[in-house]
Length: 472
Length: 100
Image (tube, rainbow over all chains, first blue to last red; front, side):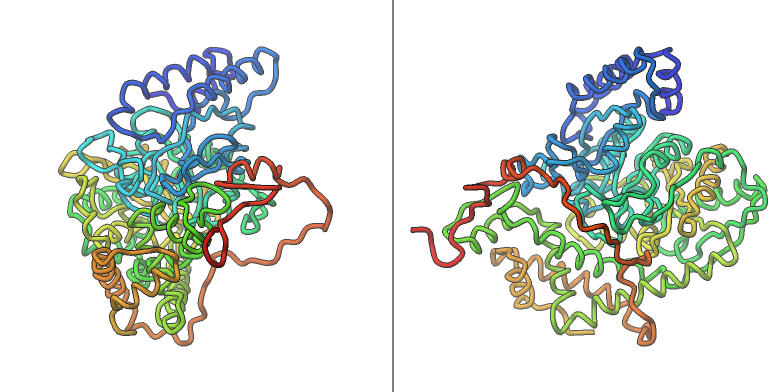
């Protein structure tokens, strides 16, 4: 498999054309996409036109960007001008956004070639990509297993070699968990480092766009391209992400690494826990000081998240009313039309979360549920800050288990939600975290190790990730 | 913590959220929402009375720009995405009563 860094270098040097690179990836898609269903839409014609434009720019002597000729797949909740954006929901049936997301514009400016829109759990709600209105995505390592979710299509696309890079979105672990289950690198950046303009909102205070890649260096490259301030997103941090790749080779000598006690015990499969211990040992062997750390309030993350995220979702998803875009189910008057449209347009998981959120926000329950959850969020932030006084990064599993079988957890939402126990705390805190593949479980399927860091410390975090990658 | 969520509560929030549920769905969702809310009881023992709430992980200040005329999305292009439009506006069925 060729990396994005290698492709861009070869295209810039004129050793390969963007068109050749694209055609190889389209052939890979043709061969296995019918089995895996990573995409909602493959935009082959548009991709050929983009690749030809990159080749023409090179022929004309123009500077090619850092992703020159690199195929990239986009989660189908990122707006693409004139190209359908579905969020894997029937309620957006036929919608073609009249604008590009900021990350899409930045990819284009960097010379990337968008190959298509990837499948997801409807409106990014789920941990298995089984909630897509268009059918599930399958795990490339074992098609009888889920790819994780909600960015399962983006993770599978990279794992299957359909594109060296893809973008996902992570509200409670939706980049890191599928990265772990599909055996690729997935990064949730610090909240605010990547503009959310043009990302269809799920839970706005938690959502963050981030990269999937086969190597830590490729993920760092993509984050450099998409990150940095955007005046169109008022929560965007007004500073650049800086040179991340330059930090990867620095090693971990002297870095302080804490293994999170609360996220490595009960509920974590023994084979996954064993890989996390091996990862800690590998970092120690590379010169890091490894200790045990405690983030006591992390155990309450799941409860806080499943009140806060649905509350924000119930508000964000109120806009799907059949008036301005997407599906409309006709009825005699507007309120009935709104209700008929939403009832037919949303799937069960989305309805479940809208009702949960509406309840958590309703008069009489607000203080007991939503208000309390927001205070617990403060405790989690404080506990992380306290832990980071003693260590530079924290280590945990990404997902409690390897990829599970289809249907295993769909009957019981709570069981499905428990999948996100290790990833959710970073979303509540707004801190960055990465999942790096680290060996396999007893079933031979990939295991991901999570590295977490304080806000804006992506450089240090990715150094540790690179050290883990190198130790394999 | 409040009492477990009831079937009537679920019917009420569905109505507030403009969702119509069948009797079977009401039973099904009541059971599932009760299980999730029951799990959330693990925060019950935490004393957070003196802990301020966090609505957002990043300290926000208002972002202002000069009040000047700028291009917006093209009206026709936006209306073309709507299920129904007329005379430069979104068209909806009557808000009160039924269509004649």
